[in-house]
Image 1 (tube, rainbow, N blue to C red):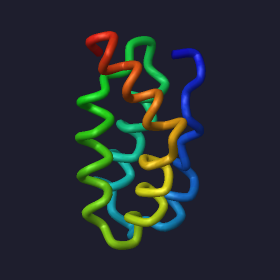
Image 2: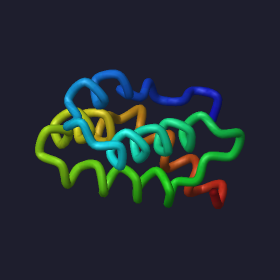
Image 3: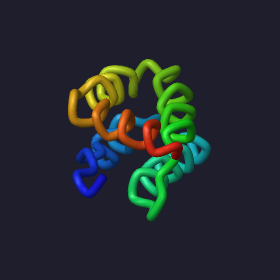
Length: 81
């Protein structure tokens, strides 16, 4: 789990409407990915919520569907995190 996927936080923030709730959700997702014990369920939850925003959908989908991201999430799930 040392190989964490590169999260596109800056691209998401740049594409976000000026909405504090969205910025918080992006920060929460980024924090979860970088945490000592990231939880796959939380990563999925934040990702699902952010993908509901049309302006963020393509960026987040490209990141989430990337094989490196999926491998990372699969490893977390297998570890019970």
